[in-house]
Amino acid sequence: MASTITRAGRFIRQPAGYRAFVPVPLPPDPSIQMTPEFVALLSRADRALGRLDGVSQTLPDPELFVAMYVRREAVLSSQIEGTESTLEDLLEFELGKRHREPPDVIEVVNYVKAMNYGLERLKGLPLSLRLLREIHGKLLEGVRGGHRLPGEFRRSQNWIGPANAPLSKATFVPPPVDEMHKALADLEKFLHDETLPPLIHAGLVHAQFETIHPFNDGNGRIGRLLVTFLLVQRNVLHRPLLYLSLFLKRHRAEYYDRLMAVREAGDWEGWLRFFLRGTAETAEEATKAAIAIVNLREKHRSMIQEGGLSTLGLRLLDLLFQRPIANVNLVKRDLGISFVTAGRLVDRFRTMHLLKETTGQKRNRRYRYEPYLTLFEEQKERASTAPVQTTESIEESTLQHLKGRRRSAGRQRLARPGKT
Image (cartoon, rainbow, N blue to C red):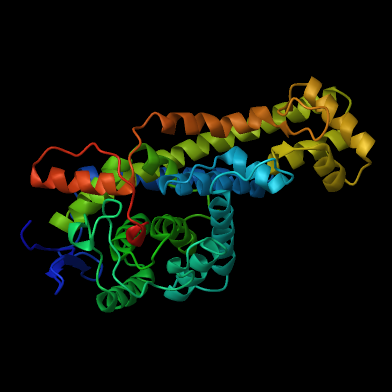
C-alpha cells in the first residue's frame, strides 16, 4: 500500500519500517458536502432524536428508564470488545450472593460507573482531555494488567492487528505519541466548536478519537461514550438515552469499513451517512421502547390495584423497574418491611406472572421481572442475528476491501497493545 495523503490525514513512515497515521485537525477541509441525500439523513436523525428527548421528558420516572438503558449500553459496548457478560450477569452481580463470578462482569460494572461519573461531571466540567482521562480511570479501575494505564494516555505506540503479530504486520497504526498529543490538543479545541450541527459534530469527534486511539485499552468504549456526552453537553438530549452500541454491533463490519475509508480515502461523508443512519434507527427504537415501558407500567399498576395490593404492591413495581432481578431480602430492605411480608408480596407477584423464579431452589431464590426484561432482550435478539467478527478481523477485511482483494473471513483476536 503506497503512502497516502487524504483530507483526513497522512500515513508517515517510521524508522522501524511501519507506517503510522497522523490525522489533520477537524473540521474536514474541504467541508462536508451536504447533498440532498445527506440532508435528508440529517433531518431524519434530528427528528428521531427530538422525539426521543420529548418522550423522555414525559416518562413518569425517567431515571428508572435511564438506569436500565445505561446498563444495557454497558453490556453491549463491552461485548463489542469481546466480553461475555450479559445484562442478566450484571443485574445478578448487583444483587449479590452469586454462585459464580460472571465472566468480565467487572469491566461491565466499571462501564456503568464511568458513564454515570462522566454524566455527573458534565454538570460542572465541560468535555476535555482531563475529563476523558478521569472517565478512563473509572473504566479500568481494578482491572488486571498494569499496561492499561488507567486514567493516562498511552506512552508508547499501539496498533490494531492480528493477535501476537508484530507492529510491522499491523492492520492500522495510530499516530506516534508526540503526534498523538498534538492531535488530542486539536480535538479538545474542536470539542467546543459549536458551528456544526450537533450530530455532525458528534460523528466527527467519534471517528477522530478512534483514529487517535490515545489509550492502551478502552478506546472503543470511551469513543462511544463521547457521542452521548457531546449531545448532552450541547443540550440536544436532556437525558442520556442515545447509545449506539446496539447498532454498531449489528453493523460492525460496515462500522470499521467506514472508519478505515475515512483514513484511507478521506471519505468523511460515507462515515457520517452511516453514523446518521445509526443515530436515527437507535433513537427510533429507544422511543418505541420508552412508550412500551410506559404502557407496561400502566398495565401492571392496574393489575396490582385490581388485585388489592394497593400502595405496597405499587412500591414493589417501582422497585422492579429499577432492579428487575430481585430476591426477598432486597424487597425487605428497600421497602422497609418484614421478611415474611416481603415473601408474601413476592409470591403474589409470582402468581400474577409479574415475577418468575429462576433458581428452582427452596432457599436463596431469585426472581426476574420477566415482562420488563423481555423488552430489552428482544432488542438484543435482533442484534444477535448479525455475523460476529472481532475488531481486527474487521479492520483487516477493510484493508482487503480497499485494496480490491478478497475479504478475510478468519476470526482473530485483537493484539493487546491495540485493544479498543
